[in-house]
Image 1 (cartoon, rainbow, N blue to C red):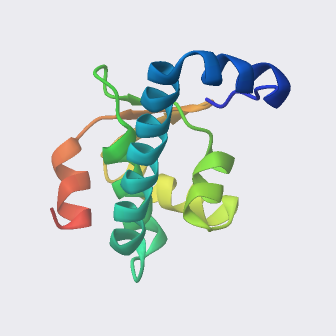
Image 2 (cartoon, helix red, strand yellow):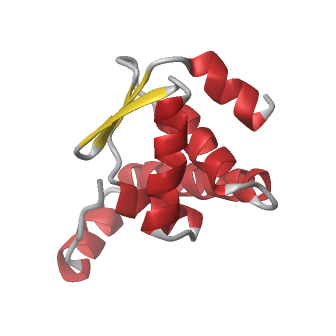
Length: 117
């Protein structure tokens, strides 16, 4: 989920509250570092392997991933159609179940085998 913040309203708050500014900066840098670590793992992998990796990284405590196929495609730099095909293969293998903007991880061990963890 993303939020758009009005710079003219945000900057005075950050200037008045340096602790909040520092925490926000650290959180942003942590997210950037996580993304940078993910990129080499995704390079030179099939779309199916990339989708499996993304599902493993984003699965919540209920075994669900709440990301649209379009968002997954954007994150991976792939087409929505190729993501849809990869999810179809994973569904046929019994690793995931798919729905509207939610995927349910059925067999995490199959995804782990696919990504080679």
